[in-house]
Amino acid sequence: MNQMVCLIFLLSSFSYGQFTFHEPYQIQITSDVPYESLQTEIDQMRLSFEAQEWSVEILKYWLSEMQKAPFISGDQKINLIIHDSLKSRKIKIPIFVREKIVKAFKTEEGFQQHYMDFISDTYEWILRNL
Image (cartoon, rainbow, N blue to C red; front, side, top):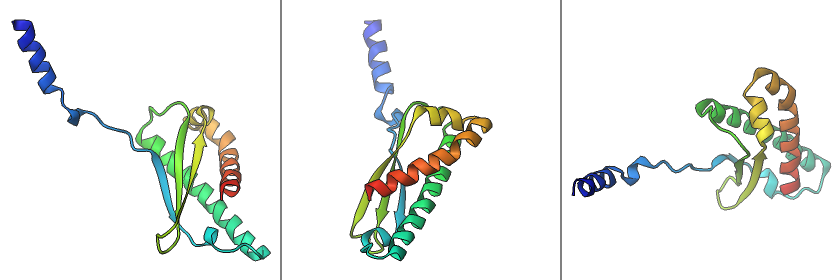
């Protein structure tokens, strides 16, 4: 009987409020450039320039998330969501952060060695997925 009372007490004290469900990492950007025609070199350069800026923003975002939760490990995914100015269309691009980059970014030396690779890989991935 005591075991049953103890079990009921434990189950009742263990509520769903104690669970924290992880929301996916995401960064939202508003830009009309990916939705415009890319017929001229200037249009293509504008898109390229914005994609470079987004890559840097993703790096800043990821470093901020790692500071908030230093226990992050393994492969991770960041959803880059690009809305047009009217918020009527959106593009969702998954950005993958591999475990080796997560580990490298946890040290100053590793960060120095890998941050340009991360920006470059992210930039290329964004352009391929637009």
